[in-house]
Image 1 (tube, rainbow, N blue to C red):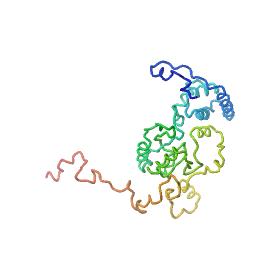
Image 2: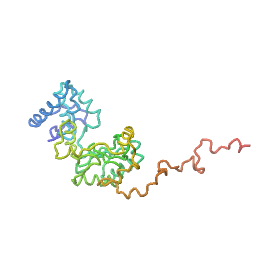
Image 3: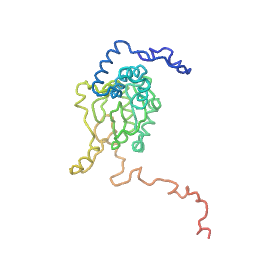
Image 4: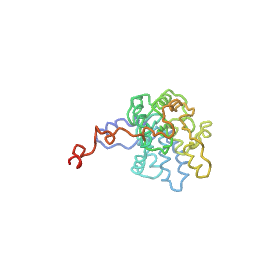
Length: 299
């Protein structure tokens, strides 16, 4: 049973501007189970309030978002006020404040990913899924959002699902990805173990082990483009050519033939090549005094 189902009339009261009633408690069996997990988390820290972040992930793993009940639970066990817990839960974007999908699909639209195609991916996914930013598909499978930089610029444009990387994406590969998620297919990130649901991800982020067989061994590490600087710093000879992961075999990467239209080495990309602008097109001058004669022309 969700918090909303345990709080009849609360949403209507909030809409009318009435003060909220105290958050209802978890059912007894849920509270007992979460309390045992919370005690394990709290024991990791010399100061109990330091356990707040992983505990918010813990309550998020229960209902898929951080509810008022979850925040009250954290406050009670950590001897904090509800306001203190709410301030943290509303500050960090990894904590969801409303029900969302099994898979949080985030498209990076920060500078580099945007110019490499992130904006186009986000626009096409909105149309393909029929949802807007931070909205969830009707089947409850996918929540779409645009996100800020995820420190994977060397694999731009990047899509993340439940905080796992899908590198070097295109609109078509991203649409295949969300279709597979909604169909229940087994999906593997570019780097790492196969995906689990958002609730399962939240429990792992709370500090509990990933108990799926083989998942830890599959986790992997940084990609080759991220490590080339480290190899150079160690004095290792660079490889003759760095090959984009797009050319590798991965079910949610663009096919190799998608690279055929890319410019040859040494040729400027579409982002570097001269564009038709007012500065390069005499028919469309941009200068404020472009229509005025110069001194030489006036003479």
